[in-house]
Length: 76
Image (tube, rainbow, N blue to C red; front, side, top):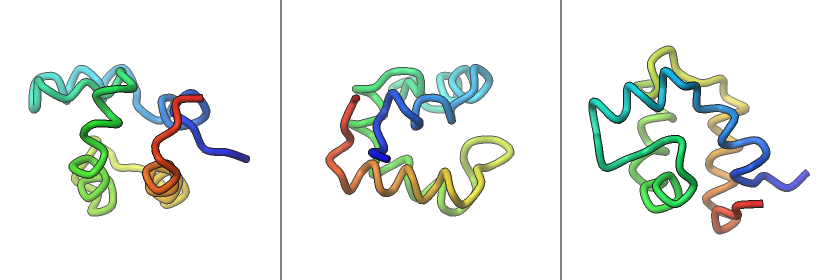
C-alpha cells in the first residue's frame, strides 16, 4: 500500500488537531496538503516525541508519516 496524503495521512489529523495547530502555529494548516508537506520536517519530530498532536499518535501512524516524507510526500 502506498502511503499518500489522501490515504491515510490526512485522515490522521482530526478537526480538533487542525484548529489547535492554527492557534499554536498559525502558519501550519494540518488540513492542507501543501502546508503539511512544506512543514513535514518540523511536524515529524513533534509526532515522534509525542508532543503533537494533543493525545499523540500510535506508532503505526508515526511510521506512516515518516514513510510518507521519505517517499516524497505524494498527494495521491
